[in-house]
Each structure stands twice: as C-alpha cells, then as structure tokens.
Amino acid sequence: MGMTITEKILAASSDRKKVIPGENIWLNVDILMTHDVCGPPTFAIWKKEFGEKAKIWDKNKLVIFPDHYIFTKNEHANRNVDILRSFAAEYNLPNYYDVGTDRYKGVCHIALAQEGYNVPGKVLFGTDSHTCTSGAFGLFSTGVGNTDAAFILGTGKIWEKVPQSMKFTFNGEMPLYLTAKDLILQILGDITTDGATYRAMEFDGDAISSLSMYERMTLTNMAIEAGGMNGIIAVDETTKDFLKEVDVTEYKIYNSDLDADYHSKYNYDVSKLEPVVAKPHSPDNRDTVRNVQGTKLNKCYIGSCTGGKITDFRYAAKLLLGEKVKVATFIVPASTAVAKQLDEETISGITLKDIFEKAGCTIAQSSCAACLGGPSDTIGRSSDGDVVISTTNRNFHGRMGSKSSQVYLASPLTVAASAINGVITDPRDFL
Image 1 (spheres, rainbow, N blue to C red):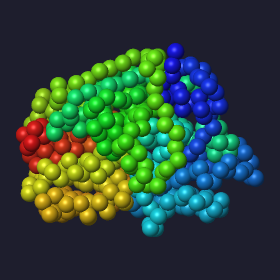
Image 2: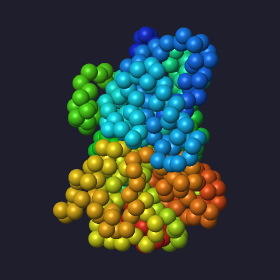
Image 3: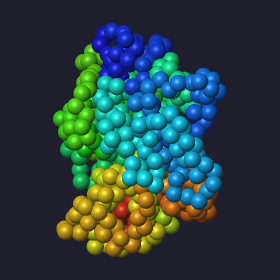
Image 4: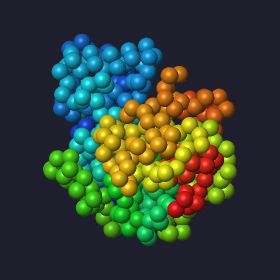
C-alpha cells in the first residue's frame, strides 16, 4: 500500500521510510511561527519549563509576526507586542517583523508565503489554527497550542499522531461566478465542522490546478473549519512559479501514490456548483446565495487570511468598478504587499484602491482587524444587531465583535455584489 503526500512528508520528517495513520512519531520541525496573541504565553511557558538558561533550538527557524491586535489603543494588546519586541531583542532573533517598521508584513499566514517560509516537503507549526494555510505549497503545516509550541521552541521536535487523509477532487472549468471560497464552503456543508477532525484534507483535480496560489490558500486555510489537522495541495508549475518569485529554489516535492489509502474521497464537478454562503453561526451552515438573497445587511467585510489576498480584491474590484456601496464596506489587505498591490494594479486604468475608494469603501491597514473581533476600537468590528457578510473564515457568536451580530461567510464576489445592493446578492446578477 502506498502513502499519501501527508504521510510521505511526515515519514521524511521522522526519519522513517513509511508511516501509517494512527502511529505516533517524533517530528523534526522546520519552522515555528507565532504572533502577538500566542507568542507571549509560549515564551513564558518555555522559560518556566526550560529554565532561565533556556536556549532556542534554532533562531533561524523561529518566525514572529505581530498581526492580530495591533492597530489599537488597547493597553493589553499593546503590551503583548511589547513582549514580542523585547523577546526578539533579548535573543537577537532575525525573523521578527515588528509593526511600525519597514519590516512589518501583515497577517502571518499570508506573510509566511510571501516571505518564502512555505517550502514544499517541510514541516511547519504555528500557534494559530489557520497555520494549515501553508499546506497549499505542498508542505505539512498545522496549528498547535502554546505548550506544544514552547516544547518545539526548546527542542525543535514534537510528538504527533499520523492523520488519515481525505481527498477532495474538483474537476471541470471554474465558472466566472465561482471562487475557492465557494468550493470550501461547499465541502463544509457536505462534511460539517467535525467531518475531517484530525485528518489531512488533500485537494486535487483540474479545477484546483487552474487556481492561483492565493486561491489555493483559501482552501487549505479553512481545512481547520472542518476539524482538519492539515490541508494540502501537491506542487505543480503554478507553485514553482510562485516559489521562484520569492526566491525559494531548494525543496522536495512529494505526491500521493496511486494506491494510497484514504479515509474517504469526494468528487465535484465545478460546472454544477453555484455561489454559496455559510449562514450564522457556523461555517458549515451552508445555503445557496439565491436562497438567502435579499437579506438586509449593515456591514460588508473583505479581508483576513482567507479573504484579504490580492485575488480576493481583484474579484471584488471587478464588480465594484463604477458602482457605489449601500452599506459600510471594509477593505482590509492581509499583508503590506497586498496593500501595495492595491495601489499599483489597475482595471480599466483605475487602481484597485481608487475603485474601492470611489465606491465608498473604507480601506484599513494590513492586519487581522475585525476577523477575530478585537478591542472595541478595531476597524470593521461588528456591533449589536449587525448583519454582516464577510470573506473571513468563521462566523461563530461574537467572532467579529458583538455576540448579537449575525455573520454570513461568502466569496469576495458575493460580498462585493451584496455591498452594491445593501442586501445579500448573487454575483451572477452582475456577471
């Protein structure tokens, strides 16, 4: 019996020729990532458990991005960034990207890709559940708690159970009205938020191959919404082209064997799918946009690691060109590189930034912003009674702010169409 791509990477990381789902193995970690929410407690646990003379196993493999609660006057949030800053200075860390400096990059999951940390065949852990985003580059990537991260920080190793794999194959040519967000919401509606618990979610098929790297990252990002341990997509020419742009030239490519064993397989024809949303208050509460069309909105939000990439803004700008939004609409680039692209890329000779501003949108600084609620002065945060449609990845009670707000998850096309009408709108009405 052959192995899946996930099993092959874990076998290599554990210095084994073969691993079997359910086995417990020691992994040699290639990258540990943390941020302002989980970095401080991770460092505190590390110092307590390893002692005052504790040593970081490899400074070059530790990457720190302040990104969650940063553009705020909240003293507790600011204190967390101060702790990161002091820790980076104390240990002379080369991969600390401080907010307020030219090194600041934005949301960790997008920055990992843009700064060349997503290396195929490697093993990457992060103190954030959406660390699975990096799996779009053919590596094993998953989130861990602060205690596990502290152990990695001191040893470079972690004890893990090999997951079973599930395969999701999308064939056909992607219609203009569909995005990767529709595909992952379709899956979530089919298997629910615990349908892939502690399993690897592998994506393939003609439609996946046609997607850009940023669109693929939407799929792997939301693997965790199904309970997945990791999401993964095999390396192809599109991956190689992206890696070349960020100066990643040395990596190992793994592919699943034809006789690999899967927990289950799902097959989709994208020509038969239509735009969907996740209704409040769960990412698997799927419905078609047509069925909820006309729902009155207070806010529209295009941002986050899931929906604040340049591809998301290209989709949105295509619809918002020459239009005006009827409700408060927030544009939050996921990284400073994306923010720069909004200033440079054009449609019909108009920059994406100008398209959004002329449409009446509010453009925020690159960060997680309201995706995780945040302090009361967080831009785009939901208020009591708000009905929001968003490109983010979670819509639990209080996720974007007020516990009494209702959040619909949707593609950037659906959010843009809805912003124009002030009610949930099918993007096909504009396409």
